[in-house]
Image (cartoon, rainbow, N blue to C red; front, side):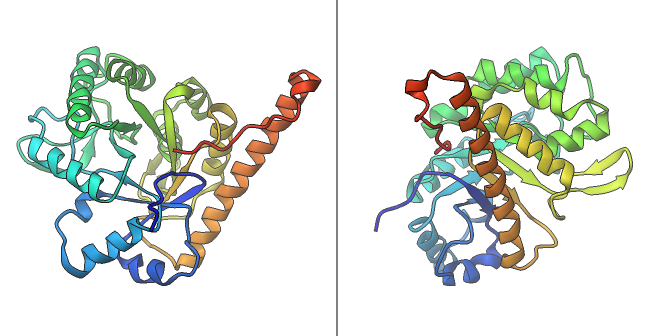
Amino acid sequence: MTVKTTLTGAGLGLRREMLSEVLAADTPAADFFEVAPENWLPYGGKLASQFKALTERHAFACHGLSLSIGSPDPLDIDFIKQLKVFFREHNIKLYSEHLSYCSAKGHLYDLMPIPFTEEAARYVAGRVRTVQDILEQPLILENVSYYAAPGQQMSELDFIHEVLEQANCQLLLDVNNIYVNSVNHGYDAAAFLRALPSERVAYYHVAGHYQEAPDLLVDTHGADIPDPVWQLLQQAYLQHGVKPTLYERDFNIPALSSLQQELDTIRTLQQQALSASRQNSSMQQPHAQKNSSPKTAVL
């Protein structure tokens, strides 16, 4: 059996409760799947066999929860080596983590904001390079939602740029996190999106959130994707290109058929952006080149 490793189209975060339904489906619900490796590493037996059956049939990415790249604690080298074995076993080429930390002399059980400082950017970039050297594959960092910015000396945008440049790594562009932060911290989401480096965007995340107050959104991944986030995703495609897009739904998970509707919306927006790109190209290029057309990014 040929193992599918390329990512394209619309992906879905795979939860263990979805396993039987996904395995039984004649056609895949998503173009690719994403899992947190921490949720699968400890398990053997039937669960491990079922997961292996899926990774042999479908493309997978991993999105970590506990690397804690910005932590003051030393990197967990043993854990990183376990990840390396896991990725090779399941032929997983894309591994992303949060540009945050979740431990400091113990697990904090939340994603904490790294201080936006040049010193922190250098520190994080050095740790990213160490992780990449051990894994022998890239580490992709996600822009995160945050609710306070302790010790801030530079903007969130400048901090992201510094880390990506110094670590020479890629970005998992989370569209919902940009929107949530724009409301909570009072900035222009579209301007923030435009200022991110297109050449470093590996793939996208999109999700829903909870509105605590008009000026406070909570990134829950537990609701349908609202219109402003859909609109921002469309802008992301036009600005940075059509790339694989993962729908995150971690709570209040509806039936797979309902999730399929959200995936279909992602695909529709991707096709619309590709059509717009083709039209722009045909208007700008010489007549001899008009038949060339852009391709959807495949990772």
